[in-house]
Structures are given as C-alpha cells and as structure tokens.
Amino acid sequence: MLELLGILPPLVLLVDLVLSMRKPSNSEMIPEHWKVRTFTKREVIEFTENYSCPIGKGWSSDIYKGTLEDNTLVAVMKSREANEDQRKDFSNAAMVQSQIIHKNIIRLLGYCLEDEISVLVYEYAAKGNLSAILHSEEHFPLESRLKIAVRTAEALVYNHSCVIRHGHVTTTNIRHGSVTTPNILIDSNFVPKLAGFSLLRSSIRDNDGSSHFGSDNLNYFDPIFPKYGILTVKTDVYSFGLVLLELISREKPVYQEGENRLVSRFTRAYDTDGTGEAMFDERITTQENVPVLDDIGRLALRCTSSETNARPTMSEVAGRLEMIRSSWQRRRMAMGATRR
Ligand SMILES: *[C@@H]1O[C@H](CO)[C@@H](O)[C@H](O)[C@H]1NC(C)=O
Ligand SMILES: *[C@@H]1O[C@H](CO)[C@@H](O)[C@H](O)[C@H]1NC(C)=O
Ligand SMILES: *[C@@H]1O[C@H](CO)[C@@H](O)[C@H](O)[C@H]1NC(C)=O
Image (cartoon, rainbow, N blue to C red):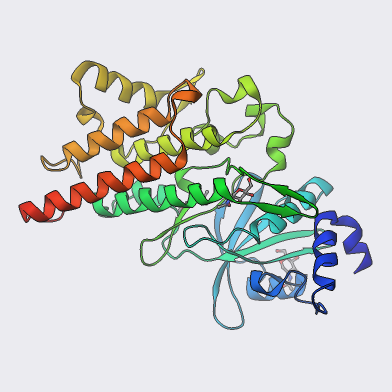
C-alpha cells in the first residue's frame, strides 16, 4: 500500500481526504459517492478472461471487453507500455475522471494500478464508436445524428465547466482534447457517451504538438494548435465542428499541410453554391432535410474558423444545435413527414 502511495501523488491526496471522512477499505480509496473502485491485477485478468476480447485501440493503450461479477459489461483500457509516465497518466486520468459525472460522458467505474499494470475500467457502450457506426452500412437517420450531436455538445459544455479537485489545487475550464468520432461511444439506446480513450493528458504536456497525436486524432487536429502549443476550449470547439461535418457528410476529416480538407471542401461548397448540399451524405439528403443540414454545416464552419475568436463557445454551439433540432422537429410534425 505504502509503495503504491509513493507512486501516486494525486491519489495520496485523495486518500488523505478520504481518511478524514471514513475508513477506507481495500476497494474504496475514493469517496463513496464517486463510486470508483480499485481492482487487483488478478481481478482484472479474471473479468477480462485474460484480456481475450479486444474492442478498440487508443493512442497508447488497448481496450478490452470485460464482465464484472454482477454481469455489468465494462470496457477496460490497458496501457500498452509499462513505464512511469504511463502510470502517471493513468492515475491522473483516474483522479480527474472519477469527478466527471455526466450522462453523456463515459463513466469511470474503477482502476487498477498495480506493478506494471495500468488499467482504467469504464462503463461499456454496446454499439461501439460513432465512427464505426457512421461509416458502416447501418441505417443512420438524421434524427439520431442530431440527437448525438446535441448530447455530445452538452457533454462538452459540462466538461468545459467542470471544477476538478486535484489535491489542494482546483482546475476549471478543462478541455477534452480528443473530440473525435472514434471517441464518441454509443450505448444500446443510441445515447452518446464521450470518451477520452485515445489521448491522455500528458501526451499534451510536452507541448510539441503533432508528434504526440495518433493518426486518428491528427485528422481532428486544430491547425492553430501548433502555434500556441496548448489546448484551449476553442480547440475542442474546432474538433467538434469536424465531428458535425463528418456527421452530415459521412466523410472523414483529413488533416493535410496545415489545413483540414473536409473544412476546405465544405467552405468551397458554401462559397460557390451558397449551400453545402454537394457535400451532404446522400442517405439523409432529402428536400426537407437540406435546410437543417445547411444550418448544421454553417455552424460547423464557424466552429472550425481559423480565427479562434470567431469560434462560438461550446454552450453557444449546444444551444444553437438544440434550436436547429427543435425547429426541424416542429417543421416535420407540421408536414406530417415520414422519417428518413
Ligand atoms: C494470460 O495471457 C498471457 C499471455 O497471453 C499468458 O502469458 C498468461 O499465462 C495468461 N495468464 C492466465 C492467468 O491465464
Ligand atoms: C471503433 O470501432 C471499430 C469497430 O468496432 C473498431 O475496429 C475500432 O478499433 C474502434 N476505434 C476505436 C478508437 O476504438
Ligand atoms: C474532460 O476533461 C478532462 C481533462 O482534460 C479529461 O481528463 C476527461 O477525460 C474529459 N472528459 C471525458 C469525457 O473524458
């Protein structure tokens, strides 16, 4: 136990805090209402059947499916390498994420930081990631895409307003730093759950930008970022704008030579045609949908503006999306239109 405390400074502070509140048992180092458990290495091996079911890859970690003793399905993120930096990342992530509780953000259920093993245990999202769904053959109506957009925006508003206690330090204005369609998970009710699997905080700490991003993340990358070397909430707004463009076009963003091709193509469409129609996913492009798709496209282009000051805040984006959605729903109701 003492060794563990030595390696995990942020958790030490938490332990202090808990010790003053209640007697911690082995599996509860964090206050009860956070409901984050510690698992032993052996327990993780058991409930993942020795990591036998891989379900995804992060930048520096692999993700496996597991089943807890009460049959709860979980996603287990395990670091690929065993080094001190990874450990710090994982313990920091555990500390921060145990305080982030929102219905559209993937819940941290527990962790294991034992010997060479760094593992975070999350709730499981049955339908997998948004990228896989969007680019599959599965029918994916505009209504679901809009719901996912609105809820994900709300999750980011929350993430940006979170006050994180880190020992005696409190941090506000937390930005996610990894808003991508592979990081938006979808549960069995088609509710999105934002995750941060592919990027942990210290990957950004080094300030040298692109070399630390996986290729997937790079495509959602804010071209402004290398200039300043720090992530801001407006970086998330940019990435969210790309997610919106991807949702309505079913095309993946591609970062190339300092700009994002998806943004340039949308910009060109609006500049030449006055509409983004040429870019929209034809599966959802109906006469009645074009105005709403155009509204989303314009909003997304504001999010991806190269002027950070011209970008809206996440709460403006969420408000605007909600408005777009409700006026679309009203119009559909009035027209008695069928779903598409
Ligand atoms: C788990 O898998 C690893 C490598 O695949 C193997 O070396 C190890 O013995 C296995 N452990 C158990 C408990 O089955
Ligand atoms: C997204 O889902 C697909 C299909 O299940 C999977 O192959 C891919 O690794 C997932 N991506 C991430 C980042 O987990
Ligand atoms: C919210 O922000 C913090 C700090 O950057 C991050 O660790 C956390 O993962 C974010 N939220 C989600 C959904 O993961």
